[in-house]
Image 1 (cartoon, rainbow, N blue to C red):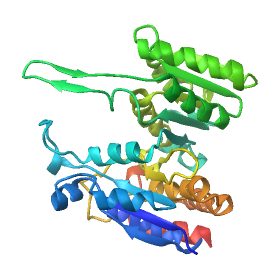
Image 2 (image 1 turned 90 degrees about the horizontal axis):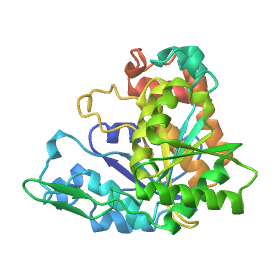
Image 3 (image 1 turned 180 degrees about the vertical axis):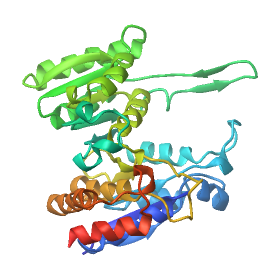
Image 4 (image 1 turned 120 degrees about the horizontal axis):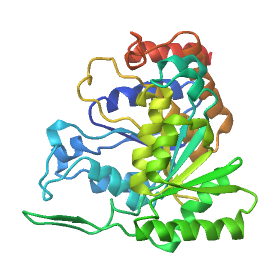
Length: 343
């Protein structure tokens, strides 16, 4: 029986890059796809960014492939109006996807595409482990004409489970990132991470960095990091910063995982890029690499995942460059290059 994959094309370039990933996936196996609405297109069709039918479909899936949500059409500062991002946040919360994994490994073929010098990024291979369902994004919110409040809350249990994910993923070291000199949530974060480390993972090296220092070191000495473990807001910012080590945010995949048996959501880090939607210029590589993460973490097909990742590497080594990487290749040409390398 083929794995059941719910596909969420979403907005902007989403449908284009998702179709590209499906072309590549067809070469490694058969999958039963179920396409559903999320984000802005769901608001247009149903008045909500996460329709009940979409949520129900994802709960019964083996894995979820999500492309992108958002766009200026749905931008609003009115808290009573729906926003596309609510679909993504709601999906993570409903499925209990508390761990977001974002691998960052600049490829030798793209060293010169990074805004950082080659000698600075060479050999970088890190993983951002971001807590995904707690913190300020999900805290109580209040708004008056003259003030606004966003509450940041973390529990010991939330911190314990994401800490375990980070320590298990580490080869040698976990860098826990917080703002413990200012925030009570960060002080609890640091206390709990230290406790989990001493009781369960004493063989793994642990260090603590304040988030501003971590942001500086990420661009000044990225090879320093193995696993970056951090809370929701800090992880959102740092992972996008880390994307530029690769030369383009169009190169970074991600996996959002919950407890065993829960379908994961696999998506590129980039946004919906409405300015190039429909032009055939979108870089599909992050979406293809997200499909590889789906094969590895969602379907337990490590060999197929490695095949896809290797094909992307070889296509870039052979000269593939999309526009965001300083070249001229469009979406279709990029897929053709990956398929050629896969063969």
